[in-house]
Length: 364
Image (cartoon, rainbow, N blue to C red; front, side):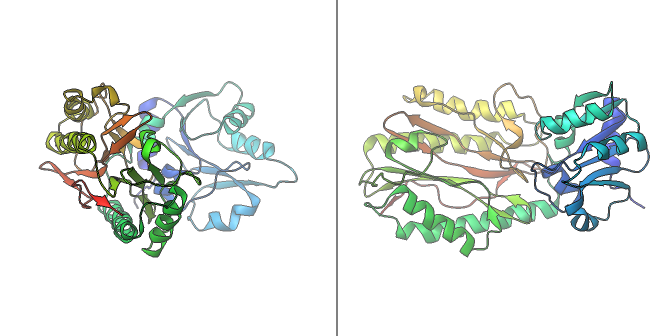
């Protein structure tokens, strides 16, 4: 029989620790094909380098936990009595001297509970190795990414004819969310960014309920959908009614940077190489002082995950990796432009999973 924990056992051995711990999140969902919420009730699965795993599970989650077909011992606990005894029981069942955890996911109180139950326990950050298992997507994951992108692009196509001057950003956001679910989103990838005029110069802006979109405004839309556990992430920038000469020049610069990213992407290239190709286009323009972000980030079960496309990151790109190519220029107090595609590294180069048109478009 195939050991579904083999990769985690190999990580434990590679890091020189007794076991690996997983908590609810993307790594957990990828392994068990089922997710649990992170809340005040700790749920932890411990996978040793050798032998069966064990888990601490809130009693109210036991019937749901049964669905993952867990092979090891389960120590449950109730709200009325607390989780301390469950951690103590697991420590007696599986004595540990060292443990690798998800450094970006495990919460501090769970970390402390493990230490309290295992005096002298050495806890190491295994985030890079554990999340590294998700770097190269499987065919099923790529299919789910394509489905999530199809939802997002269909929603955008439905939205644009409805947008016009006189609306608020929040009204546009509401229409976008409705369109995403109408096209089959199982959830939002993240809270959409709908930003007009000076708000579009804030890379992570929030829709305003009181700003009235005006003719000539830039309108930046950054959003995505979740399908079968995978997410899309797409950005397009439009102009309402008309676009100024400056808007055309800035947009053309960002588009050329975006296209340079595709040219630089191939197996063997590094994340540094891609970012350098993209950012160099922006730096060579008259708008270099408007650069505020790196090129992009990995995309999969999380909206932001490895590989991070930035100078200094020597991560070598491999077939199956997916990242966002999203250069932007942002003039504080005026407007911003971002163009974002989801890119799959292939054996011969790369493929844009997103296909929504990128020519400068005036709407409304």
